[in-house]
Image (cartoon, rainbow, N blue to C red; front, side, top):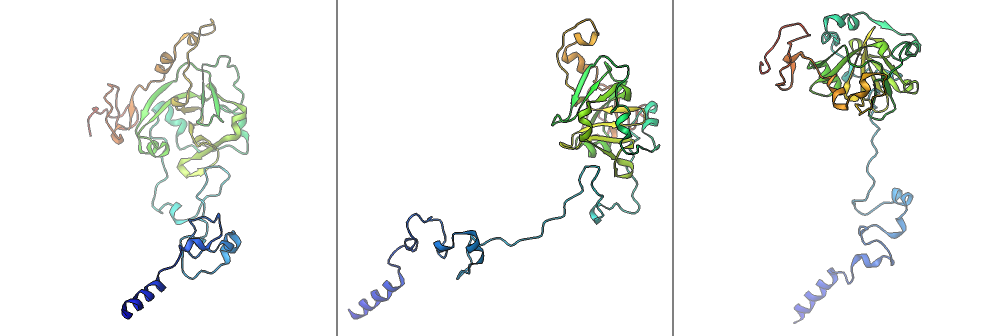
Length: 297
């Protein structure tokens, strides 16, 4: 009997007489850990307090902030980290291969740097002289950049499947339409939001030929050459309009307007991601090179 009483007495000393959370004052959160006294509820006290054992609410260790990657803005310095340094034997990107023979010279190896803000005075950024009728308007994703098109249809339009366009656009194909630079004009308030990228030298700034994008939403806007530009019809607002006698285009439906920009061929089809069974000519390289079958590997 004495042995049983001794065992019960020893067991009672191991079991708490009340729930450990009950030692906290009223209105204390029941989710606090056992070794979290109410008087250490403030952040300052919590940061300097010592606890008998680690617990789940201890502050995480502070790590140094990561080095930011290079910004797309033209004023950002070029990173010299090994990850952004090309190999010594690498070739600069060639942005001229996907152009037609009659426009390739406009985007060829000729390099032209516009000094300071002189580019603002030239097309497609400066005033559009002699242009009266706006056929279309186009905007980036955030609508901070807008430009007008003063021609009813492009000189040419095509799908480009080259690896450069796939990487620069993050898409399997680039839908591009060719216009003369004088047929395009950016809205004056849009100029401060433009950023430029010269792919052959991997440099930022208005060096022709260059890619033009919105500095806020980063949406690609067009490729600019010396005399021509390649814009992306997916940015155009194809809207319904009513004829007023000024131009035939104003009587066309949105569907009819979009048809004017439909691609006439595929170029660099050998680098395609998938087959396009649309019956349009498909060239292994630029337009006029070897033609390919739609399902040819």
